[in-house]
Amino acid sequence: MNETEKTTPSAEPSSASCMIRMEDVSKWYGDFQVLVNCTTKVDKAEVVVICGPSGSGKSTLIKVINGLEPFQEGEITFDGVSVGDPATNLPKLRSRIGMVFQNFELFPHITITGNINLAQLKVLGRNDKEAEKRSMELLERVGLMDQKDKFPAQLSGGQQQRVAIARGLAMDPAAMLFDEPTSALDPEMINEVLDVMTELANDGMTMMVVTHEMGFAKRVADRVIFMDEGRIEEDCSKDDFFGGERGERAQEFLSKILTH
Amino acid sequence: MEGDFDFDIIIQSIPYLAEGMMLSFQLALLGIVGGVVFGTLLALCRLSPFAPLSFIAGSYVNFFRSMPLILVIFWFYFLVPFIVGRPVGGFWSVTIAFIMFEAAYYCEIMRAGIQSVTVGQVYAGQALGLTYRQNMQFIVLPQAFRNMIPILLTQAIVLFQDTSLVYVVGLGDFLVHADIVANRDNRLMEMFSTVAVVYFVICLMGTLFVRRLQRKFANE
Image (cartoon, rainbow over all chains, first blue to last red; front, top):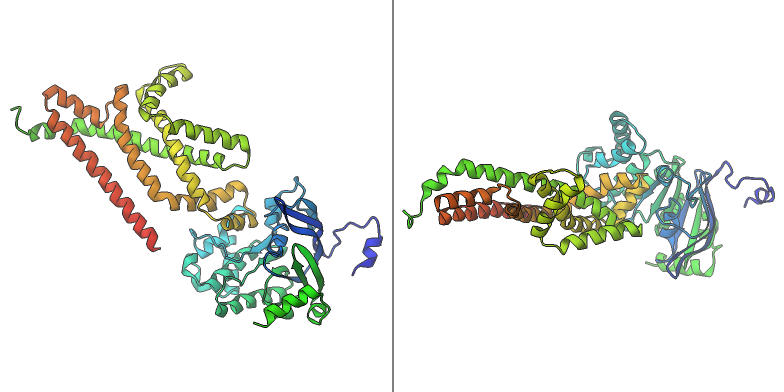
């Protein structure tokens, strides 16, 4: 896409518009290679959907970005900061990257408000009043103001996932990673979560989303990455991907999930 | 008379027995608090990815779990003054012995508790930018403690019973005070029956409380 940038030898790889850059990233679990020479980048305010069959390395691909999973080869930078560099302060870097998990992972022993407050207080060093104010704004935004004093187990799956999104946003992250955010939800709750994510994308949030929700991809994504057996098989614009400019594997995968 | 069960002697010796019981409670409390704190640190070491640390903690646990408590109490009674270089008194040597010994058991309980917290919870804490310490303090350990409360309390009841072993170093706990009265007045039957009933009631109440907690947790 950006031919001119590569020809300039002195150009820093982290150009002003690039948020996440992965270069030749490989990862092994023992002998098994989960990621094979993955190269891609995500620009600021870009929404990238990652899809592919289960076990293709999608979740691992986003978990290496914030260093939850280590990788053995290649390089990843987030906003110019190297993730693999042992000198990098990983907790600090992670606090700038929001993450939403398949199983919500709200902290069961603290209230909804407490969940959203915690890292604001302990990581960002906000005081009680500031944290509370931000948490209330976000609960309002995801439509869960009336649940603020409950514990996670008292909420439905869809509500819990919206709280999890609010918890990530409370850190005012530079990007958000979503790891199959709707896969554990009952069908009637999927849309309430996708609506929040759509709104977020429209507000200009940089997002990487692992999902099988192709409707969401069509509506919201700028680009689609298709993975198979640890490789990035397709990395193209949404229009190219859904317009038929895709390889055989991606075609096969799409026809499988769309015929149901 | 020798043959009659004499309740008066029990009632008369209540203040003296209570004094002994205070010591039993003190020892149990210090042993539990110290044991849980030290045991939790040991558990963190045991789960450390740094091999030497986990090896040392593992060896510690295996060592103390292979020793009879009464031996540890005796041993520390002579060892602690030797290390500190001055007499510390029976109470503190016994307290240290209890903490060191019980920590080995609490370590294993807390290790299971920490492992009962799912990796997803750990990831969630990390992803928010919490450091290892913060993640343990605010996310993992509170859940580990909560999951382990019934077993921690059961171990506490065992520890309370074990405090009676301090008679070997001449400390005046509940059992020792009862023994003194029994021998002084030749009322062995009365005094030892009283001791048995008191231990039974306290430990039974503890056990019933644990069972209620377990039911409460199961319903949540």
